[in-house]
Image (cartoon, rainbow, N blue to C red; front, top):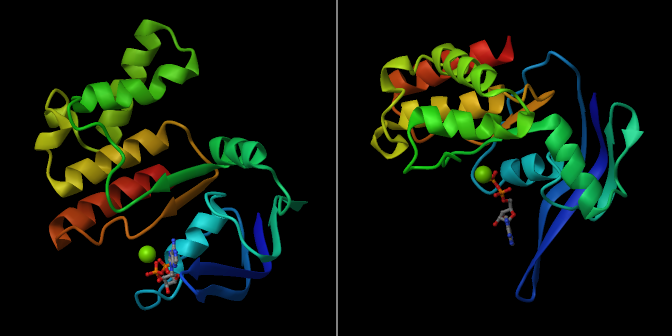
Length: 189
Ligand code: ADP
Ligand code: MG
């Protein structure tokens, strides 16, 4: 589904050039769960940003579903992200002053559902990630693990083909980490 051929990326900082990715070759297929490990600064985030179309690269080719997307414009990359990608960062992309319910409902707004359908779907998603007790709490009051489950619920509604996570659980303790892991298992199903 995704293929990287000899992808290299450089950053310019001051007079220096930092080689962030050196000729990366990688094949990823539907249904696979892939973990990328490496020490800090080894290029993991850079790789995810390239995969998601958030960042450019200087060399190599990127294929999605056998289509070469290396020469996509900014606009085409936006469509690619919208159609294919769900991205979960370490710092949760949620609105703190909104309740859990409002955060999920907001994510559903663009789908053209009726009011009742939207309400039902919102509840369904909240249950899926186990946040029904916190449904009317403001997001700012949630624990780290609950926030991350809320983030996951917002990605889940779009049902993206590719879910990218950049250290999505590294800020959490082990209890919260396993709760997030369970929510992810649900999402991946
Ligand atoms: P990781 O996620 O594995 O910790 P990164 O992908 O963030 O690694 O960084 C890879 C390398 O690229 C590091 O040497 C980092 O300093 C450098 N780098 C990352 N982002 C930038 C940037 N915006 N400008 C300059 N150098 C960067
Ligand atoms: Mg990183």
